[in-house]
Structure formats: structure tokens, C-alpha cells
Amino acid sequence: MKNLPPIVLDGNMPPVVKTVAVEADSVDDPLIQACVAYWNDVSGAAFAPRWSDFHLHELPARVLPYVLVLDVVGEPVEFIYRYWGSGHTQYHRRDYTGKPLTAMAAWSATLLTQQYMAVLEARRPLVFLNTYEGVENPMRSLRMPLSDDGETITQMFAFVGRRGVTEDMKTLFPSPSAGDR
Image 1 (tube, rainbow, N blue to C red):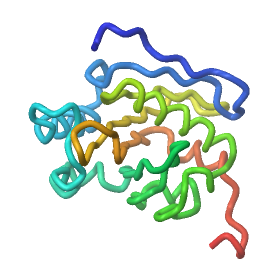
Image 2: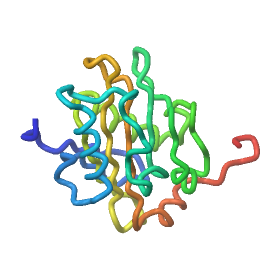
Image 3: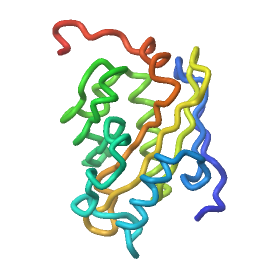
Image 4: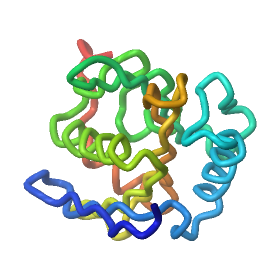
């Protein structure tokens, strides 16, 4: 499985310049590697761990504010945020817990849908190196499948490494109006 070429998701999605998917074990980031190691440990012989066996509190504390867990539901597939780490609210300026991915800004929802669909197809952890206009360093986004039945991806775990990009990213998301809170 590790011999597949990187997936490139590139297009007309300003402020996204480019997104490249790479194998999770190829990224030199200790927090991403801690998440992948835990996912591997909990998976055992299965292709992905069950959500009920995946305990967020067993991950490093520094990871938790930047974790997302999504339910994968319906046909066509829809992604609903089950868990929205508080660190994401700092730059999205909203809490999307319980909301569908499609509630986000169109460019963000399009980008994330493509990434989650790539993980559904690959059926393994991937890291997306996201390059944005006006942001010097690429943001690293880990996406990993979870499966309650051992066959179907029923949830998705995500960790977004924000080190060095958080302040620059805030400019990409408008402040919510009073009606959005």
C-alpha cells in the first residue's frame, strides 16, 4: 500500500494554492507520528480501529485542541463533526461540533471533502500538505479512517498541525456575525 504515488488535489480553490497527500509515516512531525502510532496500536489486525477503541485521552495532550472526529454517513457520503478541538475555533472562529462539513466556507468544505474522500478511497492514514496564499509554511493535516464494523469507514480522525501557521491562517476566516454564533 505504501507504493502509491502522492495524491495531488490542486485547483481553483483560493486561498488554497496546493494540497499534496503523502504517506503518514513519511512526515517528520512528532505529534503526527504519535497519532499514527496510536492508530496502528489500536487497529491491531484490522484495517482501522473502531471509534469505541480509540480513546482521545490516550493521545498527547498537545494534540487534543487540534483533533477533529467526523462521522461518515449517508449516500452520497456526508461528514458530520462529532468532535471539534478548541484550537480549531481560534482560527475558524466557530465551533462546528454537530454540524456538517458543508456548513463551512465553500472553499474549505471543498478542500476537506476532497481530502476525506481520498482517505475513504485509500483506506489508510494520509497527511495532506496544504499550501495557502500568504502563509509561508504548509500546514500538515493528518486524516485517518475509523471503522465500527471492520469493513466500512464510519468515522474519520484528523489532527491538524498548526505550529507556525495559526496566526497567518486567522486572516482566511471572517469573524462570525451575531447570527452565526
